[in-house]
Image 1: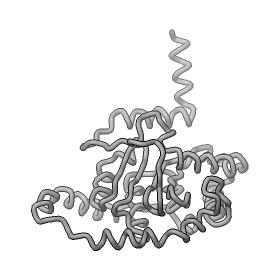
Image 2: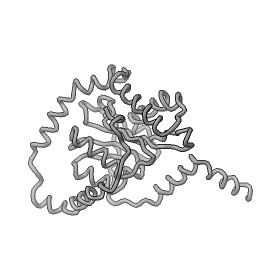
Image 3: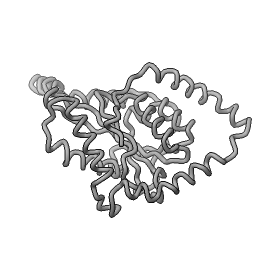
Image 4: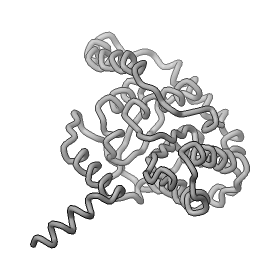
Length: 258
């Protein structure tokens, strides 16, 4: 019994195991309000860019620092193009919100369906409220079913095979530079077998459909006054998120964007 206890204590000191234990505790004790909308269909039938987005976080191990860093990627399902990517020491709720703010400014996210797992950054009330206020449709995969988020899982497996397995990073900035170069190559030069062309080409050939959809959304009448009154609490929370966001700094740089 004493030997088994000693084994678990030693195991908990391993950095990766320690992180998994800490993440599990966060998920178990994290409290969120409101119901989550879970995935109804495993396969996504996207017909134009920015109809469906999926996102996830991948751990990137930097050998020189002997620790993991975090890669958040947001992928367009139709074109397989990455619309945003962050590589940092940690990914917090505000980092996720800021990523969607950038996407909102560039393309608009009203009416967009966003699929993610049940990570603490994604189920946070502030993230759900921001997406709800932006009129995006957030849906969650079921627990322990990564196949429901297979598009982003496939992209991160490509990152693992083409970047992580080939390089031993000298520093955080070395990893950041290589990941940025790979993202540019993936989006602009790599032929994607599932779509039969380069992601950039499919995006550019069909982005006019997205622009037309967003114009339709913007021309829709605003919500009635009684609905607006019922949403006062949500609007107040969004104002608080906007005020709080000024206190955060993200290390996302131009080199990680196309």
